[in-house]
Length: 136
Image (cartoon, rainbow, N blue to C red; front, side):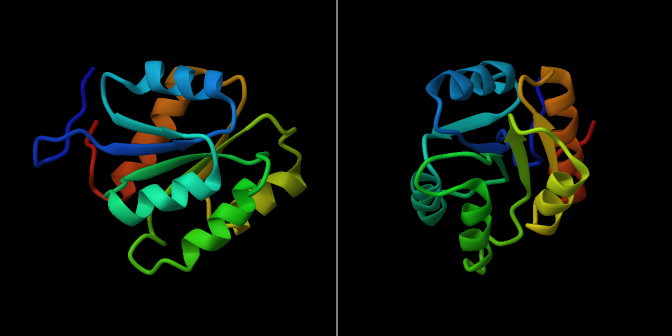
């Protein structure tokens, strides 16, 4: 089920997670419809944003050094990148308070780990449809 942008290229997803296994899982689940750029920290993610066009960010919340929430604060400071949709991927319990914090931080959506691949893909398609990239 390969989805392509109008220009004929795959949408680019920046996956930020401190655990290499999570990055591998995301890459395997998305490899047929997306170009995935995996990085292990928010700092690395910000570096990638300086040089690459990114269509969507999958972001772990709990990471050493820079949390997902801190990353989103920094993302908002980059005028050309502040509107890139973010989906948080977290192992944290989705309490109402946590969900409100995620949504107020600027994320478009979230999924909890372990995630169902089709749910994650559906949320990605939805976020990209908002920006007109992917049609389903």
